[in-house]
Image (tube, helix red, strand yellow):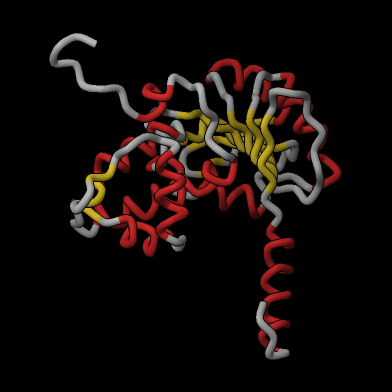
Length: 228
């Protein structure tokens, strides 16, 4: 390191030798959201206890999670909110632009296409696709709905790496297969089914009915006077 060169931090400092645990990765976006809220509130520095409270975790877990990224806190001062926000955003890859395609423009797909928070978090919807001719050529947020058959050319044209599936369960596997064939290597699946994908393709499943059933379990335990 030459004189005057700042020390490497975050992922560069680790040289990718140590993976971050999946549970920690799942919490990093929560920390990023909490830091954004603190920054919007004009807070420039915060303690681990403040950040943990804003994120809804305990401070020991937060400090352990952040230790995988590097040492960003200052004893007696805390964390620089903007700096830590940038480091986490860089670590999870949202300091760059990610083109996204959504397949299935029913009620859920329509709502996802209209969600304004994607752009501010580094995700740009480049294509909306559906097999229903009645939906094709309509527009959502200025983006036309195109035939599903155009998935491959559109994915290659925009360099899409992330695809969102919001089709019925019976159609989800075929959509996933065609996404993989088009070079899409990360899939967010809202269909209530388990997808089979080759190694190297990541799938995150969002099942709203399961989340509601978990809440129903907790409500039932509370009604029975038992700890959930």
